[in-house]
Image (cartoon, rainbow, N blue to C red):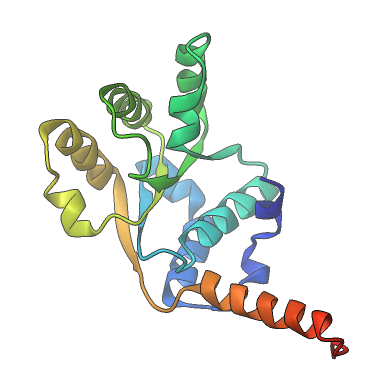
Length: 190
């Protein structure tokens, strides 16, 4: 997505513990790639998970590392023609970032597709970064065997990082609302 191109560490105003971990992940890319270690960025909506995941992607792309960042919904919605090739390509990227894991359609086909992507990454020895609103306890104690297989694999491939705090989206939304309100009321912006 074009907006994600501007999501960089330089644009990060939070400078949180999570931000520092993500920066170090990029600094030690060759080591984590060699060990096939990814990140599991979990926490509430709007806490900066996607922003920092995209910051990692953009920093690695600057280093000429091929990265794909996508949502599993897009993977599941990919047409039947060419689906196997599409999943094969996802499994071949040096780094795959799956945004909003757990928000995909809850169907047998959807779970099978997710399982194929996660297992493909594991079997190819490729790291994976996942952002999710699922809690760590939900991931450790899934409701059924299909999810247990997927979640166990994800937990074995990633290091969990908790994101918490006030929603950055809500703050951004309030700033935009104030700006527009000022314009509509005829107030000059400073």
